[in-house]
Image 1 (cartoon, rainbow, N blue to C red):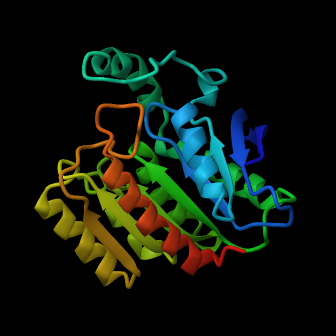
Image 2 (cartoon, rainbow, N blue to C red):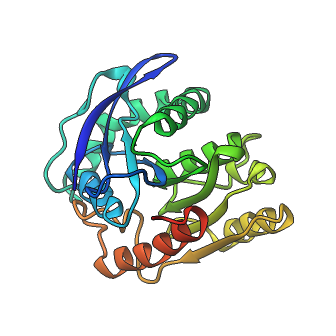
Length: 249
């Protein structure tokens, strides 16, 4: 599967990124993929390549580019329970600095860059995210509804909060079809209900599913949270969604 490294111009600099796309030539529906909090690394490259194999051009930006090119922090090959506290201590300042305002400026740049690639088909794209990337995906789809036809988030960071700009308060702006795949410990039943009420009231076509026997991070094969059956379920939900919304060639 062809891949390339890229530099995306943004209002705040240049974001390094990588892209994976089919090797058969032509133009393909675009997918913007937001990483989890740990950022770009081999497991995300593998997932992007697998998605590209189904007929998509997948763009994966380095979210923390303002702090330097990836990797800003060195990660162990496997993030287990012993390594997790130290990794989070290093990554939390990067997460906290990635404000909503910054994220939305970046989203505009990423979407524009994706649409301009010669391998990308005309028309709206999909946005997929993991962990904090799921929140970014929902914010991107709400901020740029005409440019996003599908949004999928897996083991998301909080989508229902008390903040005025909580993601669940933005869903009236969505025109995309939505799938949310939750770990059992991601959201309380009350929060899931509140999110569902907001999506339903907004007339959004959506599914929101708790994946059984999972913990936060279940798609990431380089962590102790990984669950192979849940990863398969993730592909079983994601690929039909993209096919419906983008009609992959």
